[in-house]
Length: 106
Image (cartoon, rainbow, N blue to C red; front, side):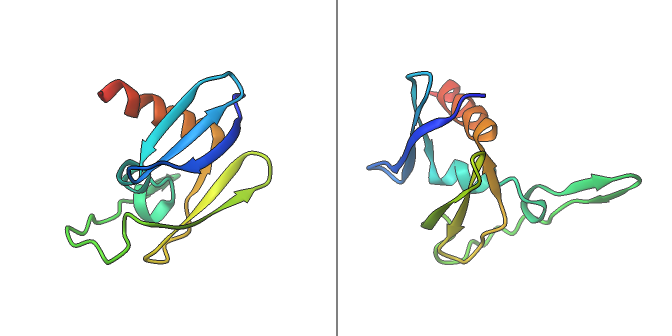
């Protein structure tokens, strides 16, 4: 598993991650929030029951602003957004995956 050596805020509303493999990636706050892995953002399916969240076109103040980032063990971070949303755990693998996807867009 590839782990971050350092995570910091970028200059343009982004998260910059320096990885153990020597690579540095950047993920915009918009992509981080839109790809929040929690159930209320992405939904889930358990056995024969599914929950699909309703996407609200109106975003509250602070929706794309980070309040703080907290480590979770040695495998993830929890991002607390300024609108107080804090239920998404971003694992190292997931951060690597969405930063690679983000990089392929450019």
